[in-house]
Length: 381
Image 1 (cartoon, one colour):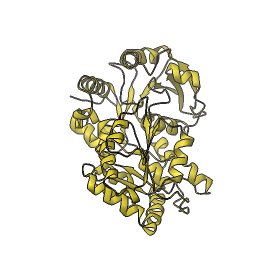
Image 2: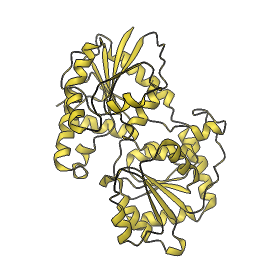
Image 3: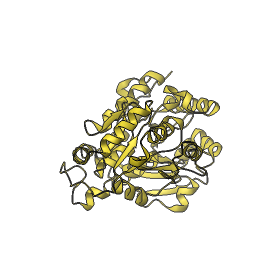
C-alpha cells in the first residue's frame, strides 16, 4: 500500500470553492482502499474543528492557514519535510501551491491562473507572489490536475506544461436538494423545480474585482424601482466593500449584503431565490452556478468560455461588462415563469452530468498514475 500525504494547510473553513473541492473528493475516497492510504497534513484550524469527511488520519501541522506568511512557508518548505517524516510515497497539493522541491513525488491541483491571465485583478505584490509560488509548484509536480478545459489551456500557455500531463477533473454540484427529492446525483432524472420567492436574485462570491459585483449593482439600479427585485449578495469577510456602492446607488432597500455563509444557509438561499446571477469576468470553473442548477435554480452567467463548459444550454449568458445587458437579462428571467421553469429543468439535467464520484475516481487514478516508475516530472518554464 502506498501512502499519500494530502496538503490541507490552506483549509480553514473560509476558502470557498477549493475547500468544497477537497471535501467532496476526499469524502468519496475509500478509507479501506487496498492500494492507497491517505494522511492529511492539516492547518491548525482544520485540526481543531475536525475533518470527519477525510478517509484517513489527520495530522495537526501547528500552522495557521489564515496566516499568509506561515501558510506560504509551510507550502514551500514544511510539506516536503512532513512527507519524508511521515513516510509518504506521494504528496497531493490540492490548492494551487506546493513545495519548492520535494524528494517525494507531488501531484498538484491548479484551480485557475487568475494572476497570470488577469494580473490587474490581483493586488500588485500579491500577484507577483502568486505567480512565483504557482510556477514553483508546477515545476516540482509530477502530475497537474485542474478543473476545466479553460484552466488546462491557461496552464499549458502560461506554465509551459505539456497538455498530456494535465488532467481535467471537473467539479460537481453538491446534491442535498436532489437527494431530498429522491434524485441521485448522476441519475439524469429531473426533479420538479423548487417553489421560490418571487423577485429575489442571488449572487455568490468573494469581493475580488473580477467577480463583477459593482457592475451587477449598476445593472440593478437600472431597473425601475417598482419592478426591482431584492438582490442577496453573499461571501464577504468583515466590512463589505460593496456597502458604499449600495448607498451611492440608492439601493439600500433592494440589496441584502450577507457575510460568509455556512452550507445550510447557502442551500436555503439557492432554494428560495428566483435565479442566481454570476457576472464574473474570470473563473477556473464556476461552482456556484452548478450548485444553483443542481437545486433547480435558474442561472444568469457571464458569456465566457468556462461558463459554457459548466452551464451548457441551461443558462442565460450576458456580457459581464455591460450593466444594461445584465439588467435586461434579469428582467427577462423575472418576467417569464415559463422560461424559469424551462431553465430550472434544463439546469437539473445539466448538473446531473457532473459527478463528484467521477471526479474522485479520476483523482485517485491520477494519484496512482503519478506513482508509476515512468511517470516522470512535469517540465515548466
